[in-house]
Image 1 (cartoon, rainbow, N blue to C red):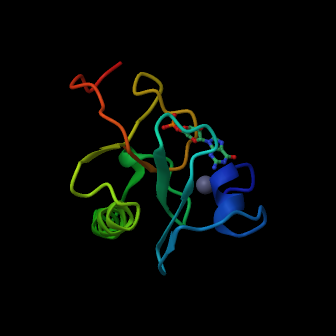
Image 2: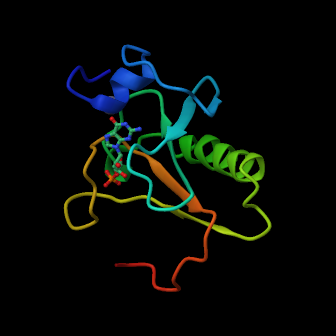
Length: 114
Ligand code: 5GP
Ligand code: ZN
């Protein structure tokens, strides 16, 4: 846990938040500033800054398992959705705790970068 990290505070339940998904290693909750009707953040419970710091790539199995289940639960599986991992400054990462954005519930543009 990084004591200055907002997502660590949520993961440790120091800040209370409704979890949409929780397993031993990952959890998910609504983005505070949604960019689409469905905008959910999925992250490891332990503090990992970003992809560059991942030691065990197995965590992505857990993160994407969560993404698939959440997409089904939110009813966007069939119509489609986007998963995004911003990494570092040029990648637009604002919170330095690895997370997947799961975005859907509307037709998204075909451009990946914006
Ligand atoms: P990034 O730019 O790092 O990929 O995305 C960070 C995301 O975290 C943003 O979409 C932002 O709205 C969201 N966010 C920042 N602080 C909080 C918070 O305290 N709670 C929640 N639920 N989301 C947050
Ligand atoms: Zn953290």
